[in-house]
Image (cartoon, rainbow, N blue to C red; front, side):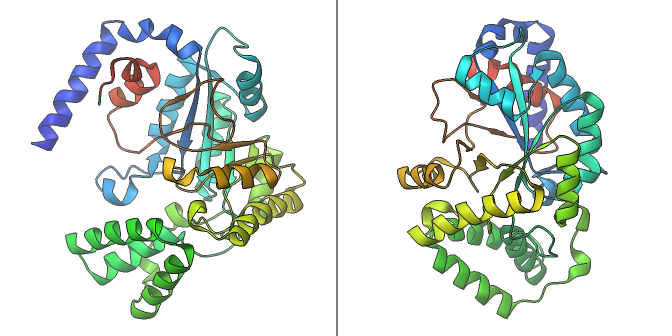
Length: 326
């Protein structure tokens, strides 16, 4: 039934696109900034396992999405996006900013060549505690340990529940649970997709900077910032910014909040981000940002993988927001 519903939805959206309705949303798009949030771009297609690879897109998928965006939008770099937020429209086309979270090696090896081929700038938000290490990002480590220990649907269910738990409790409780999980489970490194999970080295980060891409902070350890003590919050915000600057010589003015949902954007988090020296901060939720948005809560749209192209095009057209289609 779900597959049939998805097929019917994709067919409806394709019909809307052919009707020319997407052009009717041009005025809506022109007054807004689209910020796309990616995580990983992989060389091969993994649509057969959307549960594991839902936070990634294939190289072919990414290239198609950028080609479509280039027809409707003007690709901007970080400075261009900030200028638009301050001064308004700069070109005849609405702006789109491409961003990546976490700092995976595939951002350099797979995504960067495609970005350069189509002439699209991008911002790479780095989780500095993982750069240059063989670690798995903690939510993915949690999932891998539970799935390997409980094969089948049970492991997936446990991973979903435990990730939600870790995001909802104080940071000390999250760390304690992860320590308990590591003590009670084994992790088979051979079962880990290295292309999806390996992080950049600092030399590779510097390569991104040399290629002209922008860098930003994604904290040190990827915690939920609203769950930290004041000292933990200050450490996560300042140490990540200082590390990127010292390793690359770049002045880091932007941060992307881990998770980035509404519950994470407390007044304390926003104020601490400004105090740490950031001028803008990126969240998630919603598809477009406007000039009236809080500069410490710029909205981004998470691009999940393996969705029909019609859904991607419908969202970026702006028509989805205008008619409230879900």
